Amino acid sequence: MTDLLEAHGYSHRYGSLLAVDDVTMRVGPGEVVGLLGANGAGKTTLIRALLGLIGSADGQIRLLGGAPSRQNRRRVGYVPQGLGLYDDLTVAENLQFTAQAYDVPVPDLPQDLAPHSRTLVGALALGSQRRLAFVCALLHSPEVLVLDEPTSGVDPLARARLWDTVREHAERGVGVLVTTHYMQEAQQCDRLLLMAGGRLVGQGSEADVVAGTTAVEVRTERWAQAFAALQSAGAAVTLAGRSVRVADGDPDRLRAALDAAGVVAQIVSVPATIEERMAVLARGAT
Ligand SMILES: Nc1ncnc2c1ncn2[C@@H]1O[C@H](COP(=O)(O)OP(=O)(O)OP(=O)(O)O)[C@@H](O)[C@H]1O
Image 1 (cartoon, rainbow, N blue to C red):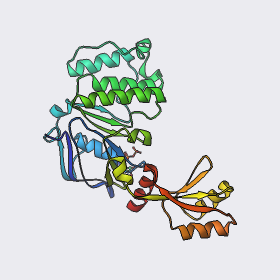
Image 2: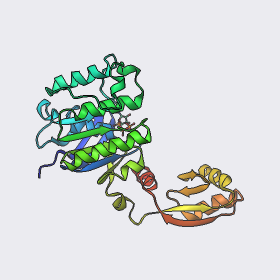
Image 3: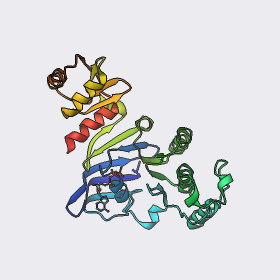
Image 4: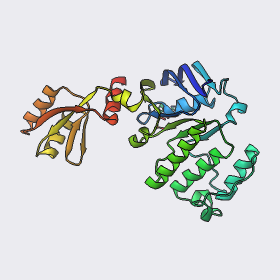
């Protein structure tokens, strides 16, 4: 089956900055692929390249089996980070404009957006703006859906609804590439692509990505002091509630930092989470 989005050895530079470095990836029909990485990892640049919105530097890009063009871009639904809506048109006008551009009938607004039909998009809450952008992106029944952080600033219920819609479309064969900072959403993807420093540093299911890797849990009553001491020692330490964890790190070094701060603690090796695995991969890429 033809892949919908493909990059082969693709690199892109902005002046001296190598924003995407030799990336090979693909998205097939019916797949939901999560593109993860810290700010500046190169995700948006890769997306723009896949859609032919920036020129190719090195390597090859294929969109729906051919070179990206105005024609095959019409078969894509794209929600960019900036949403691509017209702030000075109302909700209904934005929908109408998009429908006309794709030469499809103007649908009724979904129930949650209908009360805002005459509101200027610029005056709409961010969550509703994102929802509208998503509705517009799906209007022409695209074969590929590319969503750049579709749920940032969206409340949990709306986020869950959006993911239901993504899944429904994938089940009908639409290929989806989605960037997110929410790891819970990453878990809903069929496959993950992890970017750091422009490179693809990991891929596979969540289980593949974290498989067999460990983090360190620091068990102590003096969790605040432990956190401060490990942070000062440059460890990739996180605090969730009172749980102090280090994504990677030599236990002897961690022990030395805790001893120096007079903190008595138990250091235990535990299975890494996807966030911790990402932090380690990102550090390795810099
Ligand atoms: N038009 C541009 N000109 C110069 N540098 C750019 C341009 N766009 C992005 N960059 C730089 O390229 C690198 C990759 O940026 P990109 O936006 O692709 O990352 P990202 O992973 O999408 O980040 P974010 O999650 O913040 O959107 C960053 O260092 C960014 O500052």
